[in-house]
Picture 1: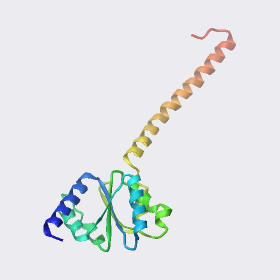
Picture 2 (picture 1 turned 60 degrees about the vertical axis):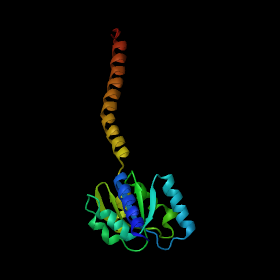
Picture 3 (picture 1 turned 90 degrees about the vertical axis):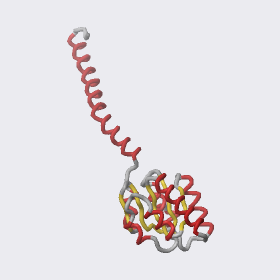
Picture 4 (picture 1 turned 180 degrees about the vertical axis):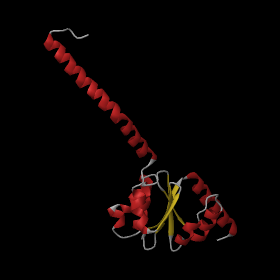
Length: 174
C-alpha cells in the first residue's frame, strides 16, 4: 500500500473518531464472509458503522487525536474491526446477542465509551448496562413526574372524600 493511501485512511479514521463519540474494537478473526455480512447488516440496522482496519493505521489515527488512547494500543492485535456509534451501549448489546455470540466471534477487545476506556472481554457486561442519554432523560422525567402524580392523586381522592362528606352532611360543596 502506498504512503498516500495510508495517509488517506489515517485521515478518514481520524474523522470518524471525531464524528462518533463512542467506538468498540472487536476481533473478527475466524469470521467467514457470511458471518461478516450478517454482522454488517445488524450493525447497519442498529446505526453502527463497522470498519475493518489495519492495526498500525488505527494506532496512528488514535495517536493523532487530542484524546489519550494509549490504554487501547495493547488491543490492536489480530484482525480488528471498529464499531463506531452514537449510543454507548448499542454495540455491547449487539455483541451479547445470542445469535452473534454463539460462534464466539467477533470477540470484544476494547471500547471507548462515555469518555472512558474499557479493555477486556469482562467489560462487555458493564458496557451493555450503561444507559444512553435518552434512557437517563426518561428516568429523570419519570422520577420528576412520580411525586407530582402522587400529589395530584392524593388531592383528587381527598377532594372526592371531602365532597362526599359535605354531601352527607347536607352542605353544598363550593
